[in-house]
Image 1 (cartoon, rainbow, N blue to C red):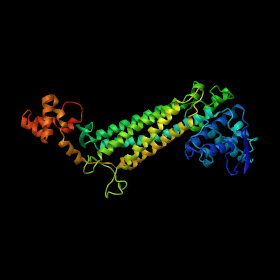
Image 2 (image 1 turned 135 degrees about the horizontal axis):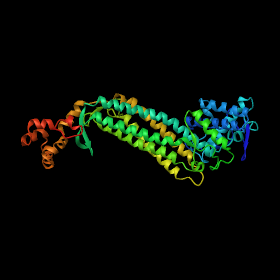
Image 3 (image 1 turned 30 degrees about the vertical axis):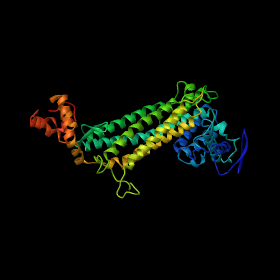
Image 4 (image 1 turned 120 degrees about the vertical axis):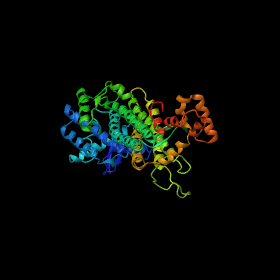
Length: 462
């Protein structure tokens, strides 16, 4: 054990860990989720600390030997090392101070080891004086969230883009599969299964644009704002340098927010990202549910598509197979919608110069991004790549439908079309058969007008 102290007093810390006294206090105080920090978030914060150290060295405030050791320690974390040294709960009081200090202590102690000094020798390398130089939790924490969001956005865009591309492929594959379109869950007019798939692809791509646009706004960061946005203890040169180094380290362009006070006390940019995720989740739920309905049955439902069998569907009913992959996408999206509510409540509960609820915002946004990425990849790999069209069943429903009577409107009028539809429903006879009996149109004209292929494109058939 080693003894460390902060202004609240002394505590003993296991000598084999890199964290210190303030981390120990946080572990004791905040036992909420029983989860650990997102690893992408840890590496994102290490990038912020590295950029700050480089900027402080460039201004001459931070000794080169100390700064170099700090950046080397940060590089190790960025490479995925020492992740077990971050035991603090993601949800905590203090606006993320305990998370920031956990990082500061790990970097200080690892930097001490790198220069041959014992852990806890904070008179040589201090978590506060050196690692946290020209910083505050109030600029480090939101900046780290934004960097992590952009990292996770790239992965999510890959997953959604892959899904949209496969839906486009299915639009081509199923372009000749005629089926009954439905509105209000009732028969409408013909459509192709390919057209439905193309519409899903369009909706997913709109979700991609929505999330990308929200994520673009995270490029403006408040590094150098320090405690309340006034930049106290941060030199102007440091402020310009830190975003330069941050851009170099991450490979993405970051810039200093126009108004550092605004960027410190408002988190609407983060709420935008969460909101974009929520709306996209709604779209994904619609798609998943349509697949579930089209695959329903298989003998007593629509049975228009066949989903791959992934696991037995019942412990009591032999042979039953359920649409489990579509169901898990639904449930994931429900969780994302719930997460967005937590983010919304946190976003509105900032007071004056700081929103202290950022930890729960980070927890929910980063979870949502990971959940959606995983669920979309699962839907793509386990369902979408292997879905098949039941062309025979689609044509059978189309032959039985009365909805094709809509195509007759320009030729026999609304009243006659309504009468024809009513008789078809009551007698359970095909529309074409009744139309021939009435003699309103020739057989040739009936065939020309009631061609399903022509009814799936703009214009008047016949």
